[in-house]
Length: 157
Image (cartoon, rainbow, N blue to C red):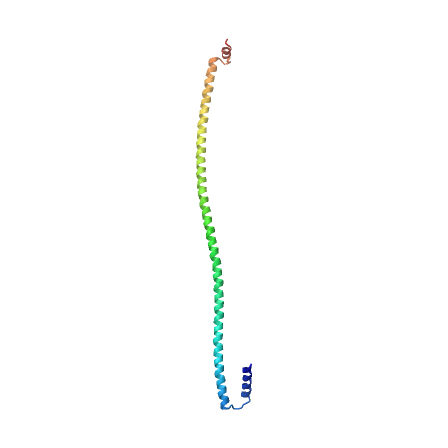
């Protein structure tokens, strides 16, 4: 406050139009020197405050970026784990599918073999049935169609 009052008086004195004395001129020169020094110091302090502010803002920004980067790294690690699990599941599915294909192929071969065997057995049964029918027919012709002789033989006549 005291300095401000001095400056006001100085400005009023200069407006008054008086010529300053040699002593006042020296005082004015010293005051100007002091003001220049004060301004230089203020500029230096302002530059320092500005640099500190910029550094603080930069540090905060770096911390935010580092935090975001850590989150992304965590997400990437999680995605990699999920991918590995999916690959393992896919591999297991491929193995299971291969086994199922083999089982289906084996079942188809077994089915074809069974069909072939069944067809052959059917043919044998048909042939055997025809032979039996043919044998029976021959026997009936020999015995005479009614089977009376047979009955008589059984009874003992």
